[in-house]
Amino acid sequence: MSRIELSAFAVIMAGYALWVFGMFAAAMVRSLSWRRREQLSQTLLPEIRDALVDYLAGSDDRSKIRGFVKRSRRDVGDAMLGFQATVGGGARDRLCELALEQALVHDWCQDGHSKDRIRRRVAFERLSFVCSYEPCRRVAGDLLAQALEDEDSEVRFSAALAVLQSGGPEDIERVFELALTHDLLARILLAEELRRHVSLLCERAIPEVLASEDYDAVLATLEMLVAWERALNLQDLGCVLSHPNRDIRLHALRLTPLVPLTIQTQGAILDSLADPDPEIAIVAANCAGRLRIEAAMPGLARCLRRGQTDLARAAAAALAEMPGRGWTTLQELSASRNPVTAVAASEALSRVRGGAGP
Image (tube, rainbow, N blue to C red):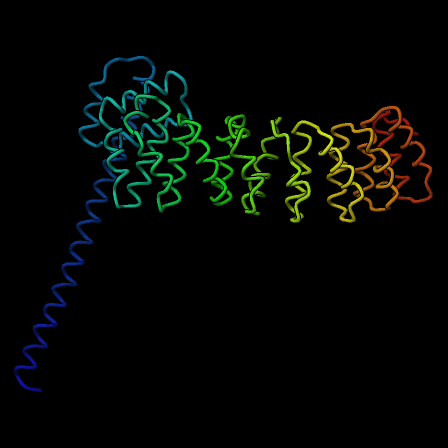
């Protein structure tokens, strides 16, 4: 190897060593900076919380808080967010007004445009808290609605929570559609917030999804509606009660006690009692008992005679909800030669009669 080649190799190695040393030095600087930042946070956060508690208790002295904002705007934001689960009403508005006064809301809106995913997540998490306060919502403007299309799922989720607090009908419908495409945990959390908008959603958004050919969206919607366990103004469930997908039919049946009873829905329940799938028949029996559909009694009696334990118990429980003819039917079936039928009928009759034998 010539001297020129050795010199070139030495230069390359020296450059590489310098680059490694530079990266190491940068990492050390970042590490030291992070440690100092964490130490400052550990010192400031308890003091900031105490100052915020005094402020929420009615103190008008904001000098301490302004001082903390100058030292660490991030820690003040963290401390405010810590009150999310503990304050409401006027106290929450007072806290949001403080964030607006100290220009923290403007900072978060600016961070909402950042290309840094983590910074955007933090920004929208905080905006979802303060945007329940209308002046903060006006500052955020269209940023929240735009963030519903963000590439990051956590940003979309936080933006959705913020929109649900003060958004218009179209925004709420967009969040509903977004909930159907989120993972299960996010859908559950959004469903709880969407629950108070059920009347609005039943006007257009929910019927449109139920009539669509997107099986996943239909099933997710039905699961959400059943979980809400509240009366729904949905008149036509025919498309889902006769759906080719078994899971969709099951959830549609579970939904029937929560919607107005029509000839169509009652007919679907009666037909499902004769379904060869025991689970579908069990759900239909539960619906018939909950709605006390007397026309279902012949079908319930047939379910009792099928000899399947779970189905027999469900049918017997439904008949027990119908005093008079239902109880008479149970008394007759308690003498059946089929032990499954006889035991289920006897147990149901015993429960409704306060423990007395048939």
